[in-house]
Image 1 (tube, rainbow, N blue to C red):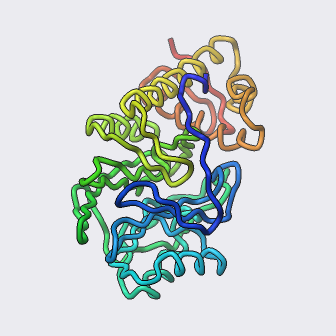
Image 2 (cartoon, rainbow, N blue to C red; image 1 turned 90 degrees about the horizontal axis):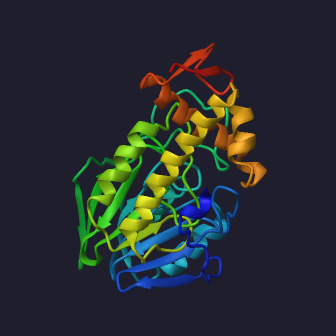
Image 3 (cartoon, rainbow, N blue to C red; image 1 turned 90 degrees about the vertical axis):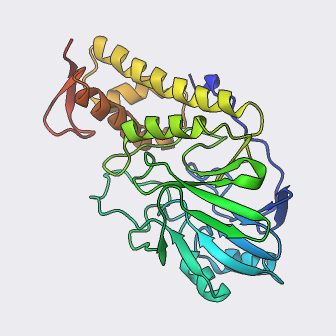
Length: 300
């Protein structure tokens, strides 16, 4: 099923080095590879002279020093965060303090902790100096970033459209190397579908995810494949229910048989996201708690 998405995984880079992505965009990758971060967090520098930094990444001295070196001779006017996971936001405030600017984004939500954590976990204390909302615009010399609210992966997830290049910094909303985990209670599958449709309707030429290389070929088709993949996952869940499976872990063993087993706990939460969607739509009923431990059956 994963093969339906034309994943983009090949990329040449050195940790801490600056890579030119486009005339307006440069990238520095943090040395935090893993099953959820791929090669590591891609930090993006937008503009020349006076710049914005998107998703500064984890707080390590090595990574902070690499960013300082990459930004030498330039003024940072905005430090921007797509969402509050530990591989995205912890360095935001230290970098902004060093640069003498403000942090922009949405605060970490007040949700109960998921039983399964993302590999890097959540930065629960994250709070920007400036809270962004849909349509808010951040500008610098030669660059314009529009805020697009894209809840789903997290409730506070934001993407940023670079007007001059018709490109979207997609954070973890759409990634080239893998699908995105939607983990309740903060992740919401219904919101995610709506956010995918919202981004697709904009007709971007390029998607620039925080993890992995940019997506430049047939962006509309790529997003369409993402949506098709999610719908197919939902169909697979219904098939497993018809086959007699009643628990999410049993379904994951079959549906995600071709996926790294380290990701199966997170896959359980993606299935839970689909299951909550199906329960709300009346297709499935639950006995016990509506979580990974629940028992699920078809209603029709």
